[in-house]
Length: 176
Image 1 (cartoon, rainbow, N blue to C red):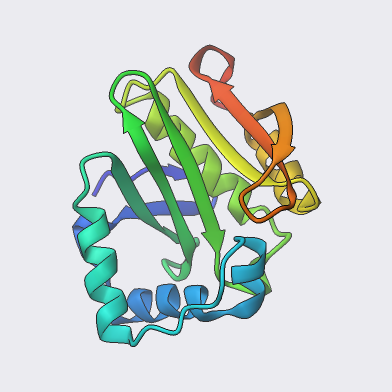
Image 2: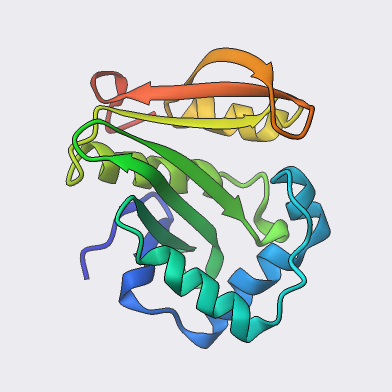
């Protein structure tokens, strides 16, 4: 299997199928109130079976590629996706590290690097962008370390200030 990888992480495509442990990790990620707050949403209250059905439907969209982030032992860490994909042009990146015991250890940065290498390599995109809360300094530092640059500030949909970031293919090197 030639899945995107960088450092200690591997990005397993949802299209490869998820193990029951990966599904449980993903479900718990979306049910966690702290993670939901950092994502600007409410904790998931949907039953597991309905959550799986919704996620599987979302992964079939043509403008989205979703991956499970696995650590060096092959264990679930979180999810990263490229969405709103305009072939040959751009995509938006989203990431959630659901294993809070792994926060601050560089796994998120490595997952972003793997996703960017895939976006600029096999996908042939020119730009990847994202939006994060201005007060989420840990995420901002991780995105900067992974190669993004801040391109603007503005009000977000939840009334908090957002930071808009992007990275262009010509500015992305193999090492951060």
